[in-house]
Image (cartoon, rainbow, N blue to C red; front, top):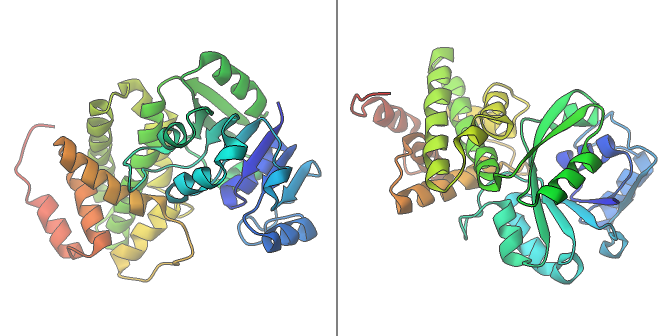
Length: 316
């Protein structure tokens, strides 16, 4: 099974490094030329060489593989798929982004199905930093696919000696676990950035996980999925490391510092989308609501903290 990776950011490049034999598509010719000349992504993954079997291109006509990994930011995915619908429609598309589309309020596999109904869709998600994958450090991910035969085929093709994949048919749960943990990671960064302490972060993670379960179960996810790699596993990773862009973004918010506007923070848009989704469905998600309000400038950090602490006492 030949493989193409669309998107040469950190994660797309890391997957190319891990798989070793793939076409890596860049959005512009200058980036492709730079990667081919240096044989490494000096901007996103410095010091990690691209394997000889990785072909870098900016020409979509070079993307002929039957299986395509979409390492495109969540909020750009729908437009990208619509633009390239004729080329991508009949293929196997594996979403590698984590988030909720702001306009449609659906996850990456949902976006694929809505935009390209003829494509066969799957999701690759779970606790992973691009640098770890690229350097061959042991990593385990969830491969979510409703088609059992396709899931098995993808699992065998995409797994490597250091990249272990677990199949899961609960695409909804895997999508939501990967999306919602980014929102909680921002909140965890805020807590640390504002000097609220490690105990507050632990409480935030536990109550944030409760919010994740609340919405996911309402949308039909299986509880065990949220307790796995794509939920709890990813939550633990992103809430505790500055390698996480979402956590770093939260740190900046907590410290009232500017954040690099060129860095994609999937959780920022997801917080706004999920706050709207929870409101429409009548789901109580106070942490998510406060994160969205902080991002949009509706509340100050002090106001958000005080509002959470002043909530009525209740059972766990």
